[in-house]
Image (tube, rainbow, N blue to C red):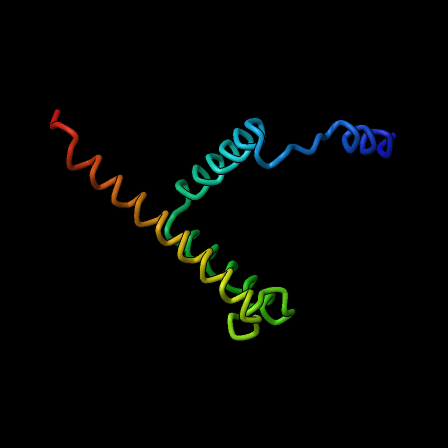
Length: 108
């Protein structure tokens, strides 16, 4: 009985394409749930989560599942640095846009 239920779930679950609107909506919902969960945490709970995340990262690093930049080939280094550059620019633009929005909003 249980195996039939598991098989049904496996068959009914549909893989979404990463560029589809449904996939993006699904990711937005998941991110909102995660944000809400993290916002509700107390400082002590946040510190415990950070410690767990650090341990998880260290474990992955020891198993060589996370590559250090010094261990990468020149091509991988260029790609990684390009990705970092894009992410930094996106972060700065987002931060600048938020500051601009706050400064240009009329007082209530």
